[in-house]
Structure formats: C-alpha cells, structure tokens
Length: 222
Image 1 (cartoon, helix red, strand yellow):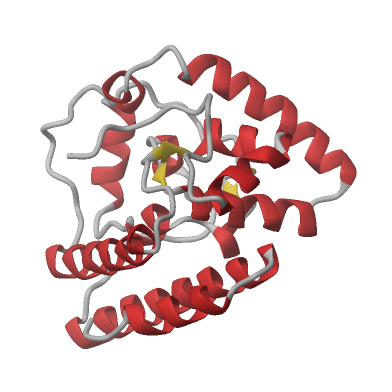
Image 2 (cartoon, rainbow, N blue to C red; image 1 turned 135 degrees about the vertical axis):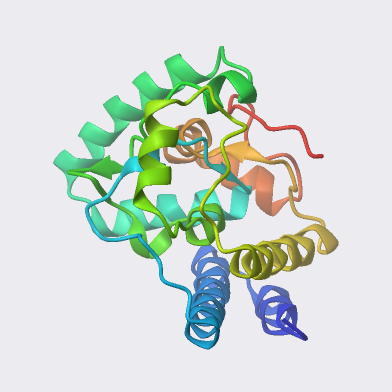
C-alpha cells in the first residue's frame, strides 16, 4: 500500500472542524475498502460474508478514538431521536457488562455489539477498520467460533493475504494519527462510544491531543 497514508496526512493537516476530521477519515476508509475489493478481485478469494449474518458482531471490537468519533457523528446524523434513545440504553447495558471484564474475558463471552440491529450493522457506512478488516471464507468456521467462544485456538477462516493487506492499511492509518500527536490508545468500541455520545469533552480532549476517553475499556498495545 505505498504512499497510501499521504492523502490522509494531508487531509488531517488541513482539518479544523469536526466535519473536516470526519471527512478525512471517511475518505481514508473508502480507500481501504477499494484496496480490499481490489485484493479480493485479484486473488479470486471467495468470501462467505453476507448481509444479515451477525455472528462476528459478538467479538470484541478494538478501535481508536478517531474511529469512535466518526461512528458518533454518523449516529447523530442518521439516527432518529427514538433510535438514539434506544441506543443509549443498549450502550449503558453494554458498558455495565464489559467494563469489569478483561479484554480476554470479553473475547470469550459472545457480547453482542449494541450497534447490531436485526442482524445488521446500524452504522455500516461508518464502521471502524477492525470490522472492515474482518472476513471469512467459511460460514461453518464462524458458527463454530460463535458456538465455542472460549476456544481461541480454533483456526479462523481468513484469507491470509487479504488479512495482512488490510492489517497493514490499518497500521499505516493509525500511524498517521499517532505521528500528528493524537490519542493512540486502543479502546473497546461500545464503552468508548457511550462516552463519546454522552460527553462532548471527550472530543475536546482528543483535539487537544490528550487521552479522549476516561471510562472506556482499553486493550493493551502489544
């Protein structure tokens, strides 16, 4: 993915308003989607993923703060007042369940994402990079993982080349934000999103190049 971070870095350098930052990230995620589609087309990978399958939406989703704010913006823009209220309730229940857990404990308990509605992602257009990277070539493997969440040794059904390509794209994008001084903490999506929606101060902290979220579950960097 040579020179891929350059447009993102340029867009972020010009960004002033929240809308500018969100536009920069949306454009970067669009380029990642194109990269994934090109890789699949070139390799002939056959994916088992399809709309209406939410098995992987019980996995822990690790994200960066800038991704959380994009999801929050999507919710404010596209959800009705009733939908936002219902989501607030689900996020509170999610946070109450997840915060006491270690990342390992969370990963082995099939905790359904609060953004999943009728087996579909309610923020699909703004979903974070971790979700865009995830894929499977075998529905049976996904079903086994869902049915046996504590079996972390079961081999996944990723295409290795595609997974490596999208992982590198994610790493490069995150590095752009880190080099500009923005929060590089790895957060859990649901707990961070609850705080992003409830506390405008989280955005101000992030914009000031401080740690964005004070109450979200975190995943230690490797």
